[in-house]
Image (cartoon, rainbow, N blue to C red; front, side, top):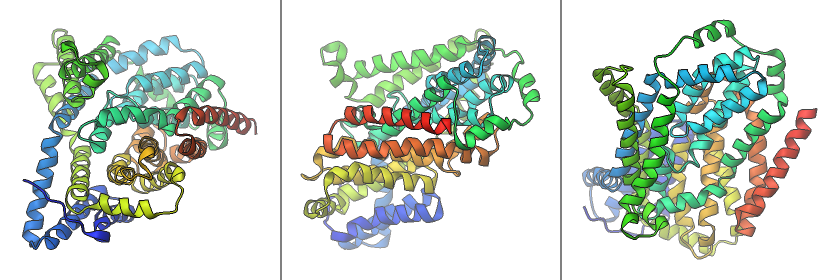
Length: 493
């Protein structure tokens, strides 16, 4: 269906305001997004002389259009979740844990190995939390590392790693929100500006290397608040059917074939430049990589009878089923963005407001970081937060006054979304991290909050600097110095 834009003035900002307000009040993303979409369609339909029935009909037209435009991304996410389910079922994760347990003999080496494993499993944050927790919990218990610290390391290498990994469900989701054409290139450009993700990973390794802590985490380490450590340690040493290669090889094939797939789809092997090729249709190339990973797992698992053919297919089906909740968020956020951009002229109205504003645009990344953090903390959803904010941020940055801040502003949006999600007690990632570590949920929240907030405070300073310098590197150097110095001072108290 063809959509014709109608400028509706200040009414054009009501749909995103309604969606955001309802999400903050109800702590529920799905119905909030749906109400935002419907309100936008009612505004458009009444302005065009339509009816309530036509508004509802156009709502589904818009959803259908956005699903069609992002069909390859939906295919990739389905294949990716299927591969995640297969790897988990194979026993390769447990085999890695037993192998690692024989190599690790100190708290620092165990924390460092947990951090590396968290970075290796970057394709999905939920899979990361449960897998790393299951593998490393018996080892950390044996070496007398608190469950709280394990939960922090798991949480800090889940979403912060996924949000900057080009081959992940998060990358494709963000790219699809930003732009239909060059969204993947824009996503890659935001990585240096995603200060919170980068500094959180640095924080994890500082803790692992120094062996120091502060605040509630230090008290937890001193108390060694571990529940049923001996029982978990014994349970973790049972011999799995799979081997380490069953974890590593499918992931390596996924990465390599995804890169080659993006190059192939974009015509790299026919003479197109590499960067231009991988940005042509990245979701199609990533789908090829995910499919190659599934084929590799089939060749690994079935001949060795790690799974029966029926189990293999059931794993794929259950994995695809787990994509439904985040996919609903994506579809509705795509539709809300489509209503605002294509129908009711939200971008035109915001452009006029920003152009006439006296606010120094250099502070925009800092403001967006704070707003995204508060939204994500309140909702417990980073996907819901950047799904709502990215269309607004991109429309703000389409103006002449703020156009030069598009990449820093988008980086701040993603960073704030991850920080709020990281701290929120109602976030699914926070819950999964405490579950994977076998840690009391409230203990994980209260021990993690000071660490995450220290990183966020340092990043807030970085966004002010980046807004004025328009480069991430000066801010990043200062952030590294501030974070390292602050941590060393606090850990001595």
